[in-house]
Length: 377
Image 1: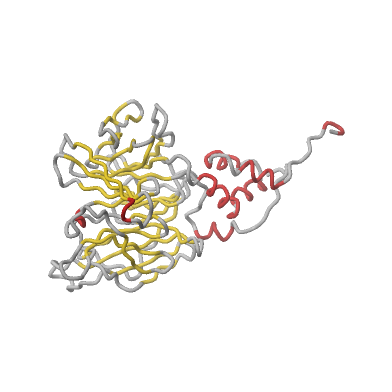
Image 2 (image 1 turned 90 degrees about the vertical axis):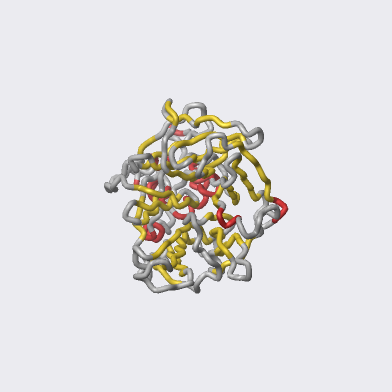
């Protein structure tokens, strides 16, 4: 090295190295210089980083009883430490529901039914505007789902809504309206009504797996059999996914459908003696549903699986008030301890850490090429 100078690292090697680092570290590196900030905000780099980390350990986002947001990032460790999310733009602590997550983005709803798209790692957030065709409340019900359309590289929010036909002040309407929001364009559009009856007892958010957002519903055919209705984000149409063959086709609409570490999972808590879980190991294949049974000694009313932490060990949210770890293989239960005390949270979900921005304007600004050097910021 002549004169003791350090040779510059080729950009392709620099990109390869940086894309292997955790998203939280890269967020700090954006402050090194303008070229680094541009590179680490570039959509191609962010996509490369996501592809390398999308199958890594999941983190948890939780809503506390006082409606604040917390995350737990090291869920496989022995010590679980929660971190309260603090935003530069002050948002009220009145969160009520974690709708779902996709590639590091989380869709949240607050007490006023406002929807926010948030990246818990970068703390970037954007409020999702209401659809101009949204049904008036009170007098209607709605359910939301978040997903990703790989063919158009766009995150989509789907809202299913219908009138409360028992409300004398609103018109009777058998249709379930389907509204779709594009994060890339910031535009809502209304699609054809759903061919299914979505007036179910539990207004659960949609479960995004394999390019589709899934809900439990009833067919309009004779006998109104239960179905798993999957809304394909490419075709923007519904299709049916086979349910476990052991289920009563008239009754499983009362179950709950969630995403569990990238797979569809169905839960039945109607049996007071036990809770039944079905996990679809191979998407779309009926025979791939695996069933697990867990004794419900404490008479659970609601159960929401959040994520796997080890083989057959799943973090469960019980009765919207506490977290437990369940070993599906042997059926044992133990408290999921956070900060040294049993966790108490009203809702939660899992997400992967990423640099994906929830703002469509950030996507447009990030589409450029840069070189990383030692220039000053």
